[in-house]
Length: 155
Image (cartoon, rainbow, N blue to C red; front, side):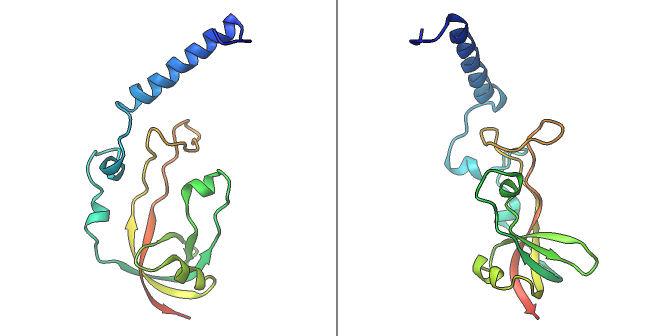
């Protein structure tokens, strides 16, 4: 027993430790291993094909917007969408730097641009990762994004 803790509190603490251990080992199957396991998609258990084999990108047009991520835990920080492209039809694309540096995209904030992009599906969080919960009580997936491969033109 821990000094200053009642018997009831010690029992609750023990139950909590059993629950945490079960969640880490029972829900995930086994604890995550570093290295190559971090590159595997949770659904398939295989390497993410979109990162290994780049496909030819599509060209999109619109106004590039930069929004700095908050420095606190929030849904916006978890999603990690700093850049977006507002199209003429009102649609919005979430962008992420790939071949074009982040600083170059920041310099284009508020400008009309034409970009070559490639779609990357959103990832589900690791079972050991902290993630905000959706209305169904399950961890939110990160949104699909478009990797910026090239700045075709800017106005």
